[in-house]
Length: 132
Image (cartoon, rainbow, N blue to C red; front, side, top):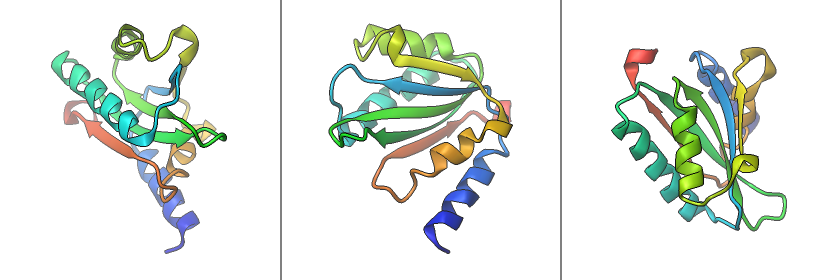
């Protein structure tokens, strides 16, 4: 299966889930992939410890400069307040660095995030099955 077909299939699979938000988190300084993984693992841990039901798929994207990443998320559940608090309290960025959009499956966010598969970036998914 070629890369374009594989990425399209990932997008189709992600689009089968009823996401609530398409989110972008940007760092205020250069963050490489390994550090981004630690940040996102800690965010996942915080969300789990909150005991709220949620689902999350995230993918790191390299900036065009190639010096830093930012992260795109698909979110299920009412956890944007926790994401915002985590991001700001850890000084990763302010309100300008956080963008939550209501998820609209017709706008292609699942395909947007899936295009980064096979591009040397990190990603992960965490789902509490109660929501799906």
